[in-house]
Image 1: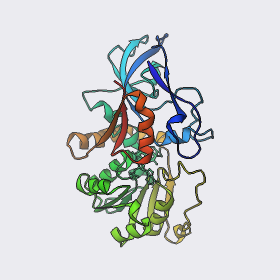
Image 2: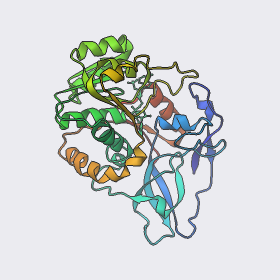
Image 3: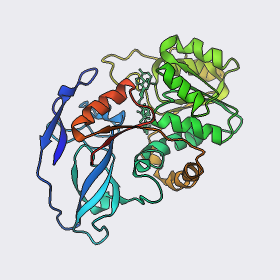
Image 4: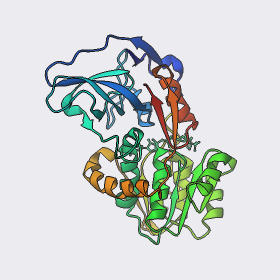
Length: 331
Ligand code: NDP
């Protein structure tokens, strides 16, 4: 069995040297425990923050130990009456081929109801982030013009599609390549999109939303957030989900410089963390699950094979090499 350890902490952009592939024994379960053979694991932007030794909403990864994060796999040994060999489960011990965990930390999933990857994507943390961020935090109404950044990524692609399915007349997305822009308007049904690398966000947003926006779903922060604040109409709302443009900067510039617009325009800028909103999971599974079954919501994934390539998958995701959710297939 193999697992990926944190070898050193990055400053700025992480590199392959920050990770180490380590051989271990396949564990035996103690009472109340199970051993899971991981089939898929998630690489997520928040893991970049956990590589730093700073206090945050999630504690840092520890040097010389395996990283962890969302995974799904098959129970291969069980010493708990609640889980049987062959059960498929979701849990928090990714970054390793075999996981030893308390049965209480493994949630059974139904591989017949949805593909296993959906439990790390649209029906999991990613989907819940999009759903709660758009509908609860930004309180989107059917008449709202919605702007989503990071729109071709895991959360953004779902947030934009939910906005359309909930009746938005105009959904705008931004992403980091012309191919992704074509994907947003062609495959995902966005009404307009632009490549933020092609020019100032402020100008490109003004061009596709000359009358302004009502809702901004912020995955990116920085220049995107500043541009959105300038475009938000009176009583506009922004869900502050993430700021990936800043995660690898050693010194992030202070911003947004135009925050005072929030006063006159009565804006709401509200941050959130998805784990506080687990109570909305049944609504996510009902509504988004139905759209998935009816093929009204499209989900794409970028899948990398092998635990030895998990660091590359993570680094590639930070660089924008993914369309939809970036996943690592372990078996
Ligand atoms: P994505 O699938 O969107 O992958 C990350 C994407 O970020 C890349 O594909 C890349 O796309 C984009 N990106 C990288 N650098 C930049 C940059 N400088 N400017 C703009 N875009 C950039 O990841 P997720 O969907 O998992 O996460 C999206 C956001 O949501 C992140 O900010 C994450 O931290 C946040 N998040 C927050 C949660 C919460 O509870 N608040 C929960 C889950 C996620 P491109 O090619 O377009 O540049």
